[in-house]
Image (cartoon, rainbow over all chains, first blue to last red; front, side, top):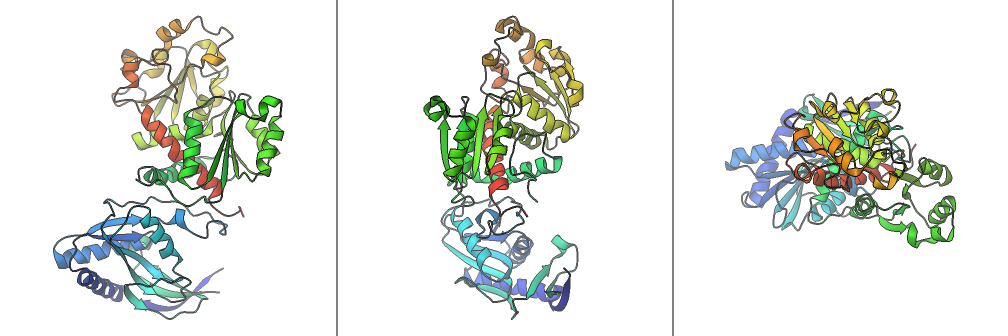
Length: 182
Length: 309
């Protein structure tokens, strides 16, 4: 089964500007970076969270705490997938209790990943609040979940897929693509 | 990527790639054991039954905890208080447990090959928790995990296994795993307790413990299984201890950063002196924690996913 590239909806510059705006919004909403914990969801949420932390550090002169969340053990589709996902490590270096957590993911779609991430995070302790930052919101939610910070809203059909390519992960230029299965 | 078999019967049947998958998954599981609330929902609604025909503290407990940390329901059957004492056969006991909805059966049994028999009898997954003198794969895997954690690699390391190799299922699982991952293995013990064809297993055998320990990166000391020593294969425990016991002087022959391991339970002062067992080289307590992580990994890889395609 091949995939066909239909459109390039964000290039490297657009991604950089969106992350820069989100960084400002996170600081504004939380009145600084006190008690802030930025948590990237594996896999592409992690480099995005890193970039957000870099940008926040440039603006505020101090870097917020950052963590990595692996949601494999919390998935609701483990028993229905034939392919078994590989479990990776969750690495949250600080106690989440009382923290303002910003979850970071690449694409918000059904909301099921975020549901799993919320459960995974709650099992680690009781944060003061949790916010959600995504680079792309493509709609088609199956759960009552919304993002607090959005890079770009993109109307899509369910047949399409939205793919983020990042230099750190894919070794290519940064871009967001809409692709369709043949 | 998943394990090729739905059973874990021995490391002999596993490929290096599968062993590495277990070790990598265990690494992720270890973080959960360090949490304040040790619980993930992955195996909700799955049932794990431990069926032990021989005594055990750590293996049975760690399988039970591994299941509980992953939200499986766990049931433990000690055969001394079960229908086994009324004469029920192994196959009938296993089928009864299967009919109650067991997803994975963890068994320890004194007869080699009994877990293979069980795997052919039932349709659920079977994990071998030690079958006679054959294999103890979860112990082998946790030993490999501990070595990799402490040394950063396994390939190229020199590993000495000391003790009653002939009767030891831990030794066999270690041999298969270590050689598959590229370690150089030497086994040592009284010549009556060494396997007759060690070379065919890809390892070197010597009855001089000093020769085996010299330059070793890892020394894995086996428990002298007093319950399997009825045949008079060595003169006395005291002599065994004097000739083959690992103490400070002997351990000094190994590399300065040697890793000392023991699967437990220890006969202090017999195969291992208390002094070295409690020394900085010893990873014996760490092995116990790693055992839970490795068993969580096995349960996830066997049960945490859909039916194999």
